[in-house]
Structures are given as C-alpha cells and as structure tokens.
Amino acid sequence: MLIFIALLLVLLIMVIWFEFKYMRPKRREEIEAVLNRDEAYNALMSAKAVSRSLKDMGKDTREAEVLLERAQMSYDQRDYAKTISVAKATKEVLIKAKDMPIPERPRSPDAPAEMKERPPEEHSVHEVKKLPQNYLESKFMMTTARAEIDKASADGRDVVEAEKLMREAQASFDAADYTECLKTSLKAKRSIGASPAKDAPPSPEAKAEMKAPPAVPGPERCRQCGADLVEGDNFCGKCGAKAEREARCASCGNILGEDDVFCRKCGARRA
Image 1: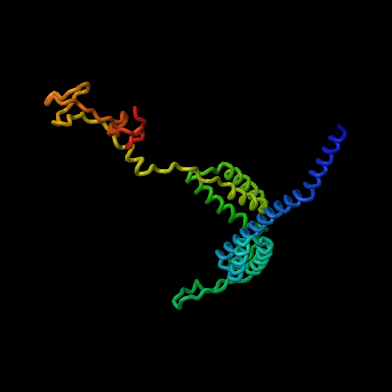
Image 2: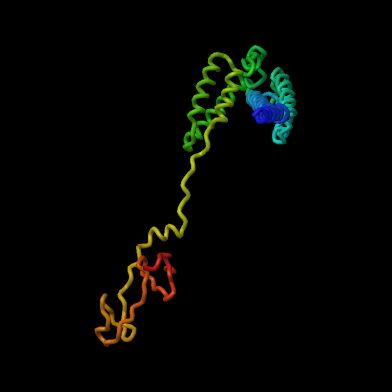
C-alpha cells in the first residue's frame, strides 16, 4: 500500500513539474501574442482614424500615409512589435501635421476677392483648438462601428452584443472618457456575429423530381395482337392468346427484368 501511495506521489510531482516546465510558459506566450496583436490593431486603427480626420480638415498627411502603409504591412506579416512602433511614429508625425498651417490650394485668376486668404482671427476653430487625447479616434471608430452594425443587422446577423457595447461606448464618450470609448467601440465592431446559414437552393434534378407527377403505369397489352388486357385476364379477349404479364415496379410502373431485385428507375425494392 505504501509503495502504491509513493508511486502516486511521484506521478503527481512529475505532472506538476511538467505543468510548470512546459505548459505554463506556452500558455503565457499565447496570451502575450494575443495581447500584442490587439495592441497593434488598436494602435493601427487609432493612427488611421487621426490621419483621416486631419486629411478631412485639409492638413498634409502624406508622410503619415506612407508610415501607415508600412504599419499595415507589418501587421499583415504578424510583426506586431514593429506595427506598434510605426503606429506611434505615425501619431508623432500627425501631431506635427495638425499644428502646421493648411497648404494653400491653387486658385483660378477669376476667383472672387472674398476667397482670398482670411486673416488669422478668422481661421477655423479646428485649426487652433487643442482636442483631447483619443477624441478624434473614438469619434471615428464609433461612426465606423455604427455603420457596420447597421449593415450587419440588415443582413440578418447577430448584433445584440454589439449594440450593448455601442451603448457603453456612447456613455463613455458622453463622459469624455475617449480612451475607454475607443476600446469599447473596437469591441463592438469585433463582436458582430456571423451571417446565418442560408438553405442551399435545390438542384435542378431535385426541382424536376418535385415538379414531375408520379408515373402511372399504363394498361398491359396482349403481345400477340396488342389489345388492352384488364387486370385479372389470363387470356386475351380479342385473339385468345395467353396473357404473359410483364413485371412492373409497384412505385413508378417501370418494367422489371427477370433478375432485377430493385427498380432501375426509382430504386424501389421489387415486391
């Protein structure tokens, strides 16, 4: 009995050692990989949102767009550390671009005098106002998520969880917690359910079988003169020849051969 208990203890120690030696580090690596991927995705989406907003304001974002292409390429190659690094560099470029004056657009010679450069005090509020951190990103992500949720709902997909998260995101935005709003909007966008499975359309063969009425076997005829034979006739009523009846399928009326066990047309078993 003591030997058995000792063996159990040794086995338990080996299992614990294997868990700490191999399994836990592996799980830790998997968790870290998922966290790095999410961080890279959030950084990339955030930088894209800021770039689009500044571009809509007329700012020069060409340098940032080049960096965004590199960040997207790194993300596609699953190099999440590089994605995060390039996304941060992109944000720094965008911060500088936000403070730069809007480049003048070429005007035609016939442009009216009112269209000339405005005095500094008449510049747009967006050009001088300092926006809170993640304000533009959260607003852009909420708009994007709302559009995708509405489309998914119209397609019949599950958006219950997404709608719940969007309400939380809106509450965070109203409370000026733009960082939390950005995170919740991303979760809402990712939580959209898959499309429900649709029934496959029936094949042409199946349609033909549904449309075709069941075959009704015709009357048997005398092999000598071709006269119709009534069920139960042993001899032809016209020429007197003995009626030799053909074996037919009870399901579809198809003629069966002498050795046929199943109908060659519908597959029904011979009666």
